[in-house]
Image (cartoon, rainbow over the protein chains, first blue to last red):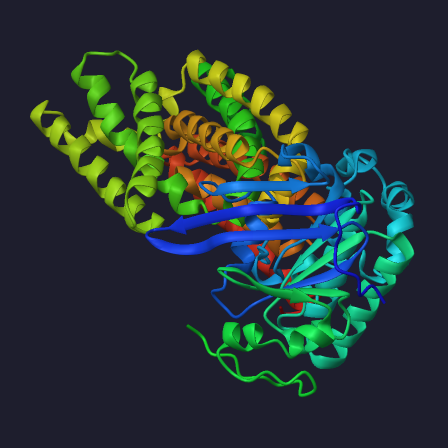
Length: 260
Length: 280
């Protein structure tokens, strides 16, 4: 277990300094400071409306108009850092009416499969093989993306994000809409990828009861990072209860978080 | 009887206006259908309809300013309408389809007012509304050929980028796709293609060639590659077949092409019961 507090000598995968963003007079991020050492499996949690997705969008260069600084692997030019990042978006935002097979979707990511349209399935599959076995999506290759179940689509999105061997994996609400056994399998898979590849993984979720079991370190966001620490410590922190506005039990799976 | 039919079919190729019309159909049918795969997937069918209706104002302005051929005015106004959609989208909180409905009716109304002030008989604008086989000059054939070469090549070169943007814009951005630039280019290419195709199909019907072939292809496909190949083929058959029917049965050109496409679409529904894709 990594229970150390980050110190200055560790290389940082993510560094956010005094990030501020106001959207239409509503302050969303009010001076976020975040340091994630490389190689950790961390979770960014917070109630709905806390700015989690917005913070993630700032880190990926998708959000304009913020002040402050975002560094990924020491790089402030986020466009240049993108090659080292795997991003797993919220599944629900995927355009599911578009006909694209799993094979075609995965081929979009790799330079060697750039001409997939003209190549045979066999030729494309050889180029994809490495990452397919690891995630277990070989049997899904011929299926249309639109017909996958929530858990299957989740695995395909992770396979896609890992194709280019990223050093940092960012997952936005990865278990939204996945059933409980599926959720467990999913976290086991993430834990395995993290251990085997030694990459930095950040889970963004409002569902702290699940992530606390798997993350080394938790950052609680509510406009600012209101507390951070190892899961056992953070579950008892008063500031977390403040952030959620209610009592949080680490052992019950259901928690009543209020929507603001 | 059969001999007579064959003779009239070969007759078609001797008529210079039919040669031009068939060449234009050969270029524009597959091009519209190929673009249409992404237009339909990105829910932009109404966008295509809006820019084509905007062309009516272009036609009216072209005639007002005394252009013998209003093609250029038509293309310019279509591009302006496309620009107006994006400008209003940025500047207001209105939904995109509200903005498009506003611009569609507005530009049709403006076009009709200008035409009525010019004392044009309704028969004159009918050719623009429903397509006119005699209106296809070598300029339209040349534009069509140029578009199919440039746009076709560009579409294939950027196929991965466009596909990724269609699936998920943010994912495309993180995968180093220049999303805003690609979206802009897609709009420009679609606007040019629709504007040039208007002479063949007419303002009201041009969107059919962008929507129906990919829709029919979608019914029969399980992969993007299948949909692109089939859509391309259906666009070709629909445009060429419709143009030929227009000549053989003396029908207006646009409706003949649209009904050919509709026939293909109905046929595409038949095998669905045999190997129906699993419901989502």
